[in-house]
Structure formats: C-alpha cells, structure tokens
Image 1: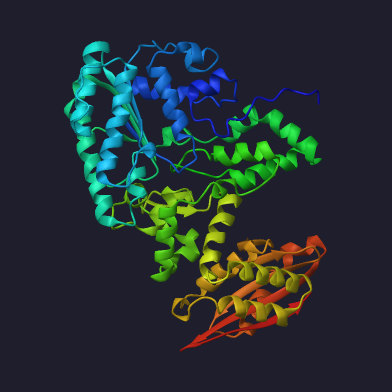
Image 2 (image 1 turned 180 degrees about the horizontal axis):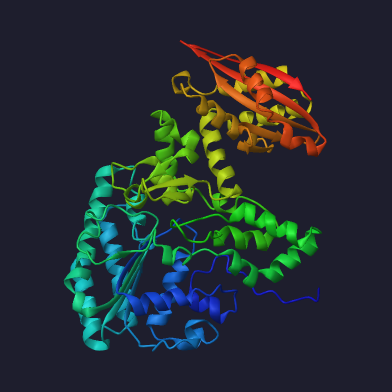
Length: 527
C-alpha cells in the first residue's frame, strides 16, 4: 500500500471547533443535527459514557451559532440549512462542584456568568440563585440577539455522583428541577433545547415541567446518532485498518471481523443498526490492539456501588444477566432510592437491546460485544473473590492448565476452591446460576468458550475450545453427573465438532448443594 497520511484520531477531543481546525478525523453526524434543529424544538438523549455525547453537543453549538465555515465539506454544509445565528447557552454539568448544595449552585451561577460575559451581557445581578440568573440570562440574550438555544450535557452527573447519599442526591435533583422549569416558563424566548445524560431519571422528577420534551433514547430514527455503524467504520477507517493489518501481519478480512466482534453490537432501539463504541474503536486503531479500553477509562463508581449492593443483597440475576427482559419504562427511567440494577446496567452501557417482542412489549438484553462481556464478567469475578482477586486469577490460570492437560481431578479441585469463595447463602438454587458462574470463570481464564450452543438436537450448556481438545459440558444441580453425560450422548451434542479433528471430551458436571454443604462431581467420556 502507498503510505496514506492518516488523520489524527480525536482520542480526547470533545470540542468540534478544535477537532475541525486541527484536522482530526470526524465521522459526519451533521445530518442528524440538521434533522433535529429543523424538525423539532425540545430533545433529550441518554447514552452511556464515552459515546460522543459531548462532541455532538459541541457540534450543535457551532451549527446554532451559525459557524458555517467549520462545516464546508460535511453533510450539513452541502444542505439547504439557513445558518441562522442563535445565542447559545451551553452547560456541561460534569464540570460543576458538587461537594455541597451551596458550591453546586455557586458553580452553576459561575458557568452562567461566563456565558453572559461571552455575549457581553453586563446587566445581570450575578449574586442571584441559579434559577433566577438562568431566567435573566435567557431574557437578556433573547432581547439582544433573538431566540436562545439551550444545550445541557451530562445533566445527571451531579445526581449520579451523589447516589451514595440519598438525601443529598434528592436535594440536587430538586435544585435541577427548579432550574429546568425556567425552560418551560420562557418557552417563547427559546428556539431549541437539547439535553444529554447517561440515565433518564423519572420525568416526574427533573423534567416535570418540560412536557413537550421528545425522548430520543429508544427512538429508531436516532438509534445511530452516536457511535459508528459498520458502514461508517468501512468508510472512515479503511486506511487505519489497512495500516493495522500490515503492521501486525494479519489479513484485512480477519482483522475486520475481530474489530466487529470486540467493539460492535450496541443497539439503542428495537430496529436500529448496531453501532461501535467510538472511544474503544479509536483507541484500538491508535494502539493497533484489542483491549478493554472502555472499562480502563474507569467504571462508573455509582454503578460499582449498586452492583456490590446487589451482590450482598443476593440479587443473583446479575450472574445471568443476558436472560433479562425489560419494558420501555424499565429501560428508560430510574429514580433515586429505587434503581433497578438491570436498568442501571443497561443505561451505563454494559447491556444493550437484543430483541423486541411486539406482543409482550419486552426488550431482551445482551452484552453488546466481547469487550463489554469480558469487562462486566471481570467486575463480577472481582466481587466473587474480593478478598484476594490476584489469587483468584492465579487459580483460573491453573484451571486452564488442568483443562489443557485433561486433568479432571485437578479441575474439580480448583472449581471447588473458586466456588468456596462465594458465601454459602449466595449459592443459588437454580441450575443456571452455576452455569453462569462457570462461564465467567472460563471467560476470565481466557478460554475460548460459548454458552447455550445451539445444535439440531438442543442447546449445549458450554463448549470449550482449547489448542488440542474440545469440551462439551452439561451442568446439573442436585442430579447425578452421569445423567448430564447421558444427555450429551443421547442428543449427540459432539457431532458439529468432529470436523475440527481434535480430541473431544464429553463432561457432565453436577453441583450438589445441601443444607450447609456443597460439592462438585463429574462424569466424563473421551471421543
């Protein structure tokens, strides 16, 4: 390949002007911006962190400010957009001081004061409450420049960071509700509103006054407004993939498939195309490697607290997370003091929509991709072995070695050690719990595995693929391992794997749980 000059990747750039003026790569989302600005007035969009919300808000800011020169070669620059200049109030609530309600309100006033200074509005009394200052600023901007555009990024940041103190989180929520009510009160002065966050707190809470707010979160039309589709990846990142393929000496097709497996798979509505997480994808292109970039940027502390709480409170659904189905209200909104864990896991990006059942109106959820599945399972594994995660991971490497060597006695011994770390009262009475925990162990150990593998005769619980052998595993609870082995034989589960020419081991595993007792037994057959 002739050496193509690759544009810089905007790994930490969230300002549209800087991105354009410094010639960073930009995946054109301006058609969505055009459709929003010309087709409606009040919008709310929630997406997980690191999904491009701030960059999109910055893009809207430049469009609404009439800065056409930044968009000449983009979709909106070639459209019939009129480029009317609006005064823009753009607030990112993640930059506010939330150590106390006074500091929160003071820093919100400071943010409004900076905007007033940018527009040379000097007539305001800056010693007022955020609500009254917001109202005065909108009115002053409207009087001087015309109808105002309001952009609020990460509206929920102050609440999410305060969830460990419920009373304070409610105080922050109420302060924000009072603040946002101004948008309703001054409707005639406002041209456009766009608000983003990670979570949708119950509409009766923060946005109770904004009854004409269009919620885009699960909207089919806007399912790919953020994140990158396969088509966009092939169009914008082709040269990056070519460079990666040459540098690492792997075929372009193989690399393309791996990128898809690792980072694609988010669905934000029932019928939209899948999208890639932009943060993970661009970091992968930057380093030419597959890593859990998203989780390395820091799992949300509020989510970690809720997961830990759920674990202690025996919310064992989290170990079988892909079996969860929720309706639109469950997916869409949460409230302080009543946050269902599956909803929070979906809204923070660890789960995505798999299918939608039109009869029951339920969304079935799944992990979006290999990166997120591995990241979430690592969180769960660290919870299970929280007394000593390093020793736990060493046990997993021993487990992998035992499987490579076909040493069943050693494998059972290691599994018993791992399960002994789970408090006895948490050991569930459903077979699928043990199946799910096993899957976590195999995944974290780095063993190629597939759960619920469909064949013509049924579903195999777990298939493991190792360099020289394959395991077909059926699990049972309080039944004999021989019964599990007979099921594998009777349904001829091994047949699809004969073509690999490897040793095939049929393995029945039985988890035996009594009153205060726990044991694991096995029955096996080699083919």
